[in-house]
Length: 141
Image (cartoon, rainbow, N blue to C red; front, side, top):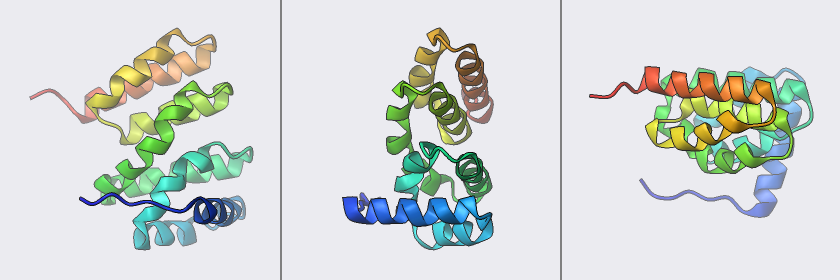
């Protein structure tokens, strides 16, 4: 699979447009856009950082819907998500851990295990659940 990329200007513009659509409740529209253009998975980390709860919840619903249908495409979001596990905001750390638990694989468990020592008890709980979810979805052979 070839690497896909997005310019900084396009990333900023797409993030704003998609976030505004999610804020207004246009999840179906956004889902169709992601189905059509897998480059958009590169901005999922930006959407998780949005201060608007509707945007973060919409992003989670989007990824939950597409993970079954396009498992390889949703994994394109992981490079933008993994650094957010160290974000200063516990909400972002928790939301990110939850999403990695949804779309990640065994190779992402070690990054989540670092959150088991987090100062925020909710982040610890979410990280633990994310690890359990990855193990459940990717059992050893």
